[in-house]
Image 1 (cartoon, protein in one colour):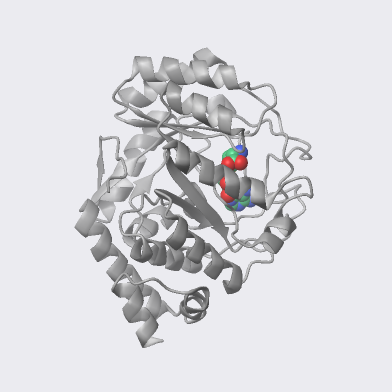
Image 2: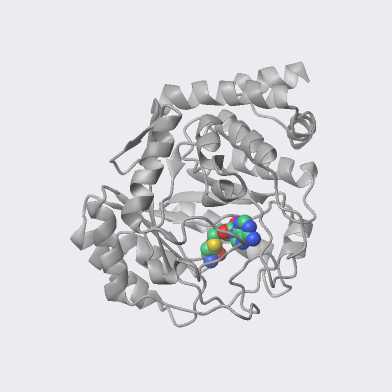
Length: 345
Ligand code: SAH
């Protein structure tokens, strides 16, 4: 075990088995040690700064039926919405006013959202705010769509791989979805030139340290620029509604390991982490994360983008979110900064 930890601290690569050994050895003491090391590493590259990304959840209509997701196609009792172009542009302006220099457009795979709609939106946002980075999180599309949007000015793309284990992937998704296709999208996005975000839920159903070790190995090899990593939280009405949520401790442990294996990675302390513990995001930052993603969606639609139960920040206005996060970060000695916060090699 000690030799494996030495490798981890020295930035040497680990095997899947070695990752599993570390994951199985999780104790509060080891977690504290890894968090301390991870924080040292993050400070070498990012000091005490925290980057902010303004998140616009522009539609909850989705053709997919992912078993864990609260806005899956089969979900009843969800009032479906799609923001108009004008509304999205207003959100982006509001985010700019609040000092956000990255705008994230996220949504379900809405069949009514065309490649052209997104392309025109990208041009309009980048025209209005040329000093902003634009991140897309729109799921699986064709290479042509990804290329078109990149040419139109999109900078980054978030597409969590969800799990690096094919068998596990098939237990989390319906048969019509494909592990290979999702992984191939990630590869294409990187080839095209996006800063790419992969990631997974911690504690998703059927997940053991075996699958998490494979996720870590994948992150180590693929080296995404960003890693989205939060606890699984059951959503009412989904096939997984009675499953257990992922834990705070394991999520923090993984954040620290990801920081150690990938020192410059852009790593958000997610909303899901803030949902399972009132100070989850602050703890995430202290464990190695360096990004927060406040919500910019109009208040009227926030409680409709319910990926999981009890999601936080659904009643607040964008301005409140901004100052709340700033205070939270300051309470643990970090500072929210106004900048694009790009990945630099
Ligand atoms: N449609 C886009 C955006 C997905 S929502 C896409 O396919 O990429 C963003 C992320 O929320 C997902 O990638 C998933 O990892 C996470 N998520 C979905 N349901 C969740 C749940 N019940 N608990 C925690 N995270 C969840």
